[in-house]
Image 1 (cartoon, rainbow over the protein chains, first blue to last red):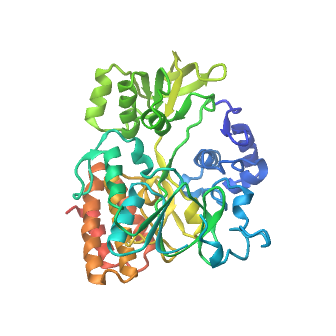
Image 2 (tube, each protein chain N blue to C red):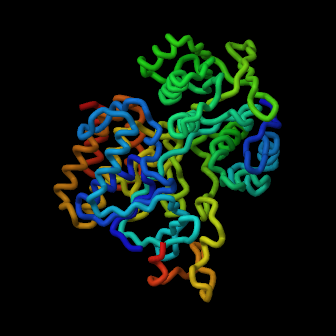
Image 3 (tube, chains in turn red, cyan):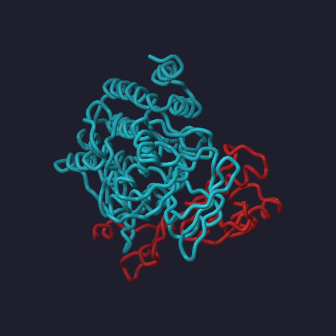
Length: 110
Length: 370
């Protein structure tokens, strides 16, 4: 197949770029991600995960069962920063990422 | 918010689990990212066979209505347009409605986030006019828009062929089913017969070399048995199957396993449908790609396990119910694919350290038949 074919639509990464990353020593999706930004766009590898796994499998002759998906992180869906901060203006930033969490009286607004 | 049970995903598995749990007096919240419940049932206009005994054979849309309406008088809170986006350090689940993030504290969680369609790469696959077969069905049956005039389908599983039939019924000219293998993947005779009578060419040993066009698909070249054929096409549907959605499980620290017959990577679980993270359960296609009957049964098993662990069902009663449900699941699933049920048993045997009576019975069933 034409090596200029796009695999990761979000970051416009093609087959040649993924194969180059593999030639440079990448053997997991996360390696390829770090080298190329493949899978780091808005969809967060929801579409390209298995496509990239397939390329790794074929290039390195490793069965698909040994190639894990990329590390998946929060937030699970694109989320506005404003939706992550607490409701009270005075509070420090409260989010799913933070050490603290909203208190009881902050919970029943929605 | 606080609840006994939080269900992530309001598709068939989530709705059925909510009904079974709430019928046992469990306070339940169902979160779904869409504005309406039902998940992928919302555009299934075909008759569903292989449903569990308690359901009459019906089309997906009416089953969705049944599953939703049953919840009316029960202690079930529906949070539609709410998406699980993560977890807090204290274990609460963060759910966002787009404006704010709401922490939900739940004793138990059942994750029923279903599956995603597999993508498929060929030069030109990013052009408008190329979509998954499920997307074509949504556009057609939910939005009432015809997705194209001259279509081809890549892949030939039963779902792809069924939607191919629906495309034809809606006036689309289906100009070919392109299958890589030397035979069709799907095996529903009725659908195959329909396509044959409609004169749809089936291209086996074939693949799409490229799709091209100015700003959208206009032309597709296929390789059929080694020779190239050019076609005027404005709709390419990719029907390459489903894979379980993994994100919520990774955030909940669940361990994964690989089972090809269940759709690839998926969370490990026990015969209780509990994952490696205590109090987190899985059901539906997220627990392995399967038919609708098995989707509903895994949901019921998970809900009964939750009821047992919350003290709403005694151990004996729960064990007996689960045994019957697993037996029914075996029959419904192996009617479609024996390999799938084998895959499930293998997954559970590798996960459960102590092989319990339930699992050994299932194992015997899967190797010996009943």
